[in-house]
Length: 471
Image (cartoon, rainbow, N blue to C red; front, side, top):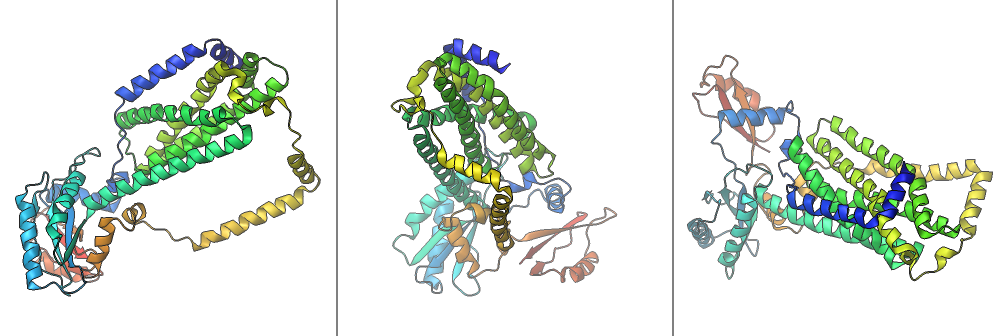
């Protein structure tokens, strides 16, 4: 089968390249944009208590709004806010409100903190309706642009934090991380292939081919996400870069090594490529199949993040495999031996004395090699005991010097954690009767066991009551 595929590709290389170009244009042009969701709750199963509480809130308190952003004011010298400072804060907030920034519903000043160091202005925005909705982050950008000149020349400093601001800064950090990963990956591949083959053409081949394949894979993942309602996390982009260039470079290396081997054996370039595809096809297909199955197993996870990650990476590997068996052989068959230019080393069989010596030693003393390599693995595994998991997703994906992080720290110097965005505790009557005051004392007694401060609700005509607790 792979020999027949190799003959088809080598005899019709331009047709193969043309099909890939047409497919790339069609998929990139028609596929939906792959948009990462920032709602971490969307990755959780419906039986989790937090998701059930969220559904109760949406049903019983649909009008309840949590500030999407918080403007934090403090003095440049770190001192207490004076009456004049507080008056300036009120004036700035009035000006921001009067500016009628898109998607900013209300901005209201709260009293200065207990220690007098910080004053905040919560910003209410309409809820985000879909992962592609950038209204809140766009509003934060506009607020920051409008806020900067307002505090310039005063004794105040101000910045915006809160969920929308953290989302914006997290996206910026993610873009920088993806750029760093991409550049580092490309440089590593270039250096390694230049060292191995001493040919700039072979070194650039994976970069060009996999770069084009990645666009096709992204489009197909976008279609799959839309068809199966997959929630794509922002980490998928970075993982795609690593997976695509990792497996893609491996497949190209396998093919080029076998191609060079057949050329040294005396085959002409086209025959050598057909033989290379026939010999390598089975190996890389079985390897890719194992990886694809392993990724698809993630769909069995109860967490939406992994259920979406598995198919996305499986699609990427499948497209890369197809390119390795068709597009790369087609390109190389057109170049022939020029693909190794300017090096002539491909004509000479290397002696490989160093690696041959290592192989001989391993064959004579396998126990010692096993013990040495196992010892290294044990030493490396010992570092896992010092690992501490961090489930603060915003902190892990945002730079420490980002505005939202800096002013979140400023906020914590004066207000307890959770005071600006307290957790909600929902109490629901079993009989469906309205919540009345006699029920509240019993609930208040139980709530005292909770750490932090708990704010009791008022009597309600609804069968559900909402408590606010901050820690």
